[in-house]
Picture 1 (cartoon, one colour):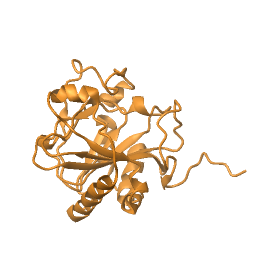
Picture 2: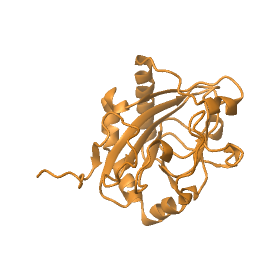
Picture 3: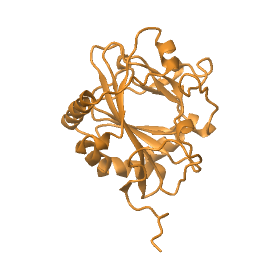
Picture 4: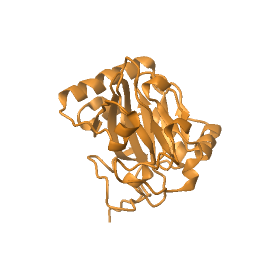
Amino acid sequence: MVGASSVRFYRDNGYLLVKGLLSRSEALAYREESHAVLARLRGTDPTWGSARELAAGPTELRHCHDAQFYSAAFARLMVDPRFTDVAAAVMGTGNVQLHHTKIFVKPAEKGSPFPMHQDAPHLPHTRHTVGAAIFHFDDAPEEKGCVRVVPGSHKNGPLPHIEEGGWHLPPSQWPLEAAVPIEAEAGDVLFLSYLTVHGSGVNTAPEARTTLLIQFRDPEDSPADDVHHSRGQGMMLRGVDPTVRTT
């Protein structure tokens, strides 16, 4: 569980890096599980068109949605109190509901970047409680294309995005290199508001960068549009759903 100062930091800055939420040995096991899942799947490269322009060279990204449906290891991780207690604290509620999960792997030397963006345009909600937890299963220094954020940008509310090339912000106004790099170690978890402007660079290192995204919300925060459905969406990860009525 994080303290009051960490919660204040999240609310002031729109992000919080929790160091060592998982042990390095746990992170390594999840790394191996992530790569095993992707090896069994025949996925397409989800690299945004705008990201290919940003990279100015060959890039590649590997991912899968709904990781918990391919391995029970991720189902256990979604309800781990070490994660759900932090998610509850930053939202200010005892109830944490799943929106979706994704495994992301940026392959060595050519892992695709992400231009600066908010997650909100992909899954708009009415109360803006939606957050993301990015689990780092190996070290993520700047050369591996770590996440970069604009502290305090969540206070601007939803921003207009460019739809063409992957729902991103204008690069001239939101250059990736101007954002703060959040370097992380295996086992660290980065919590982000879905309104926080963020992106990530190219992985130029000789090792892949492996992460799991868990997007969560307060169950009383209803979607603003009928978009972004995923398997398992609405599952309670902590507490109860007070919106459900049995009679």
